Length: 225
Image (cartoon, rainbow, N blue to C red):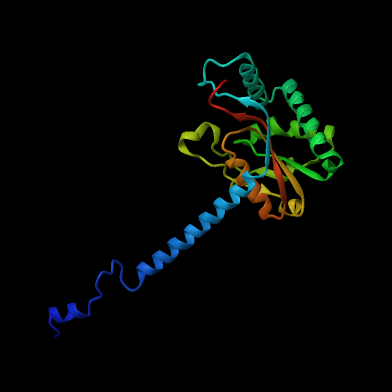
């Protein structure tokens, strides 16, 4: 039997993991980092595109705001609650912007909304709205080509938890063939960091779409002046 001292001479020194496990884990970590870097670059690419908003939105916790900010809150809240009069007003605003921005090209653009967190909210908030925008502007209605399969956490209501929009196959069903080689404009009621927009844009471009940018009813601001 070899002595313990002799065995020690042939024992690999400074190895935290046996049989090359450290190298394997290092390689896996490197691949993960590369994947995350690629994802971040894709998000940056989407966020660099034109993102237009109609009004400034100041959350309720921002006090001492003017009447304009209060009216904007009412507009955003009314739209989220699917108030018919406000929905029609926002649809007219949106259609006017699309016609001014894209002209005759608008008839070849697909208009889609970032899905709301629940099926009921999504139907109430966006189905009628999309129908009106597309009727007024002549843009292609993409509402029925993104379908919610399950309710998801609300990004705006769970910001402290750093919740991201879930566009996985378990939550959302995309009509992949429909979006292939289509120009697409993405709409949402409120944009804060733009992450939800960028993630949906990435998903659509994975299917072969060309996302032109984002259009938003409001953008969140935290300092009123």
